[in-house]
Image (tube, rainbow, N blue to C red):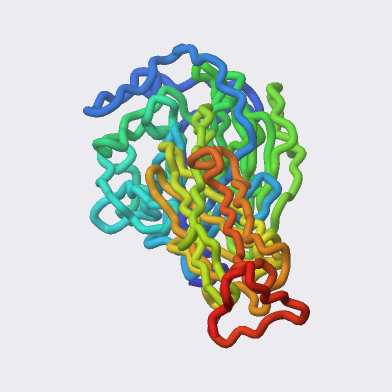
Length: 464
């Protein structure tokens, strides 16, 4: 599916949204949840919080990666840093209306978009490979929402809550829902969008206790700016402004990022509390080529996942080695936590390459990407909890010998949470035994003496 076709499908689906019959309220005012929402439809599964339930202020997290998904022919899962630099990209199996990391950063969910003819499905996705590892049908009221003439439930917003459940929204209704990912059962949330508004994608738990929500006018054409709303602890809702159309959002370091329908990533530089319909100030941090369908981070639930990984380096020999010998180095990166981690590292080869030469084509990695730039070997990769990546490379000791006759180098973690597996376990030092310069050491067969070499009686004879 091309980008134009992707946009056209999204536009057609939004345009077909059910016309809401709720009473219209003034734009930019606080809107209380409707009576039907306040009572909540009782279904099996998690209970939505009662109206007026208080929420404590959320944690202030350090900056972390943000994730987004695209669809159609460019169906991929992307990871970016807060500056908009792409960190990783893998293919996905399905189009997802949105994606969501759990609050501990360990699990990534995707919700089928617009769904199959028989069921709406919640998928568990491996962010390292993009593969689906589990799936469960979504039931309850959100699964019954459908555009007229279509069996699709039209879920286009999915975000994690600190209690392990998921918030979800649909472009066919103003109602917001809760999904239990263990059972797939949905129920009505205690708040909804104001009359005339439906979900545009994502709900973020702010550090002041509000939930930030993105909406779109019901039936609006593709490209219509998205409304930005605060859902307060008493379940009233206030519109605080608009932003360029976004289909997903994520939070990093308590900064909010919106993933544009046309492919841009926006940072919302201000989140006022006063009612307003005016455009909010945004900074465009990246302009990728693929339009986004959803976004997420491990911080969306107001929690701070703590990535942790270790690095261990070893060599095929402790030495000493001789000119002409080949040594294999191995670096193992292990995610020792539960949160998905970027196990990036830089291996400084300058202390090796003065005495040896990197064997062409010898750099391998079981996952991620390993590249040599100058005298640095850099590896970048995503690791789920407990996963290990193994990176290997080979060098051949120069013959005749060069350098300081010591192969010494250290690998250093370059992403959050990285440490050496053991004290000194990131450094390997191998001596080079250059017998030409060391009295009493035999040469290799056929190796001539250096000019001026003294072969007196006090030293062991050389091999012929």
